[in-house]
Amino acid sequence: MNLPKLPLLLTLLSACTGGAEPEATATDPDRPWRLPGDAIDSILPMEVMLTQFRTGMDSPATLRSPAQGREELARQFLAAVAAGDSTTLSALLVNRAEFAWLLFPDHLYALPPYELDPAIYWLQIQASSAKGAARVLERYGRRSLEFRGLDCVRDTVQFVTGPTVAWAPCTVTYRGNDSTLTRRLFGTIVERDGVAKFMGYATEF
Image (tube, rainbow, N blue to C red; front, top):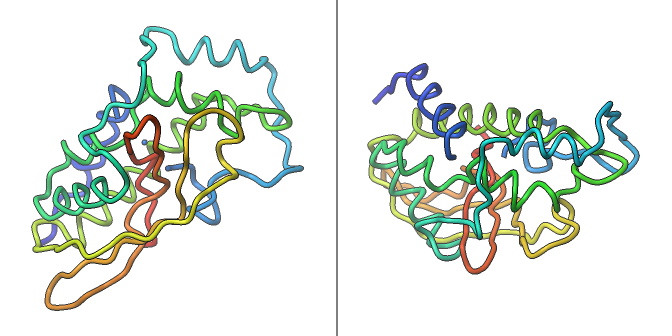
């Protein structure tokens, strides 16, 4: 079944802005950050950019997610896709406050020599997430999907300090339409204090 693209993109982008995440646009969507040496010049110091980005947002104590752990997160993702449930898909994403207070300060892009404006990175994450989710829903929305397994690689590049653990790339094995497939249907998974969320919905499609 073909689902309308524009309303979905607007819905996800709106959800990301108010609460819900990646992923950055890059040649390799599994690695949306740049390699050491690709310095990013910034006029403002990181402390100022972070303060501006956090304006109007309270600091969350930790990530809030309906999923405890990576496998449960992947299961809920597949269930939401099968149901065409964009609300749940948004809830499984890191939201703006979580990104601003918990994740970005420890991210590679927040540190020298990168020091990327968090507002710019957040917009990149939203754009690629909306695009990725739209493509997955177009292919699999409102179809039977059965979770079979999840395989992730520990990512030690994105978060260089702090308690956040990142996993990327991740592939999910599922059964649908009498076929068993293994695909990369989402981007980085982040775990913190036993809670798992998606950093973004960049996909191989």
